[in-house]
Amino acid sequence: MLIRNVEVEGHAEAVDVRIDGGRIAEIGAGLTGAADVDGRGGALLPGLHDHHIHLAALAAEAASVRVGPADVRGPTAFAAALVGGPPGEWVRAVGYHESVAGELDRWVLDALAPDRPVRVQHRTGALWVWNSAALRAVGLDGDGRFWREDERLRGFVPPVRLDLEGVGRRAAALGVTGFTNADPHLASGLTQMLSVLPQRLLVMGIDEPVKLMLDDPTLPTPAQLARTIGEIRPRPVAVHCVTRVQLLVTLLALDEVGSVDGDRIEHGSVIPAETIPWLRRLGVTVVTQPHFPVERADAYAADVDAEDRPHLYRCRTLTEAGVPLAAGTDAPYGTSDLWAVMRAATEREDGERLQPRSALGLFTGEPQHPARKRRLAVGSDADLCLLHVPLREALRTLTRELVRGTYVLGRRIGPA
Image (cartoon, rainbow, N blue to C red; front, side, top):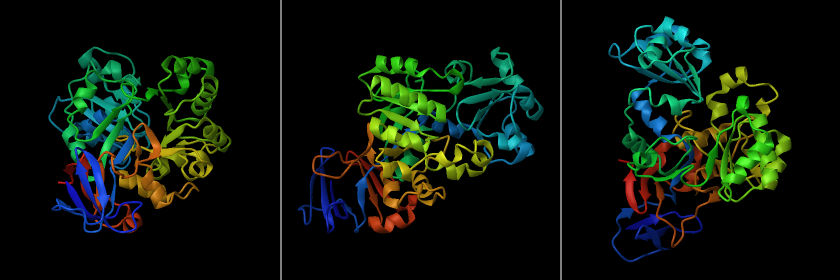
């Protein structure tokens, strides 16, 4: 394939790009041959990679009811969302936050939707709440609250239709050529199931790094976590850190066992200023969600401890300190629109705002080294995102409408 008249970083003038065998074979002006694509002066970028996403959960949204703060307001609207659809069928509701209708348990759900099996997932993805009809249907008991029990519950619930084709199609329209699936517990056959996606795929645990989940109620000591990491070595780890204490335990453990190339902190939700030099010394990459303080501003103002608010989802202070930084959408627990994440990173009002080019760079890193930026060069894989306009113009808006073509190994996958 020959793409003519495109802007490529490192070249002062518009160039042509020839692709052969899934790789870039030539870059230069006036390459011979008929053009397959006229770039019309638009920027040709490395394809975007979402460095932290939950693909099966995102694909299940097509068969789910959204009940987050942006979708329903108050108990009445929440109840109405739960009782729609054919009588007797299970209701799978997602995105819930306590600001909608308070804390949930089986009895709260019974009062809202007593006549059908209902299960509601908290927007963190960590908690499911079932009503009595759902518990009776599978022979379970208790208060209906299940914390990080997806693996056990999977065997009880009816199959959910996964719209993976839709996930892949919508991501291709955004210029996405790759995903890193960040599920802590791999469902049987997950890799084969995800193979229908046209994008490239890295699955934590099967590929590197290995995902490690931390929760405050079951938090290991630094020595215990160091032993766990030591058993995984020489493979790198990606440690889920959403609280101050989780980060501190992880840094102490990595100090003890030693960091390796490819180690990551997932989320880095709370990074106190005094830990930033520590992160730099260890050389670990922080894969964050810069859109969460924007998407969840009201909830964070109410729920997050005042001492932690200045340290949420750091971006600018990390990059200025030399800490490797990348981003993932964490979809479906955040938006799946990478361009919206970039815009949020440039609109932060908490001192963590990034410049547009840096925001774009959050998603153009190597899959296994997310902060190591990919460049278009002869011999590199032809995973590409073609924009309608030059990069300077694109950086003014950072919108999904900029994407004209998405290519994986030189094969066009979108937009439609």
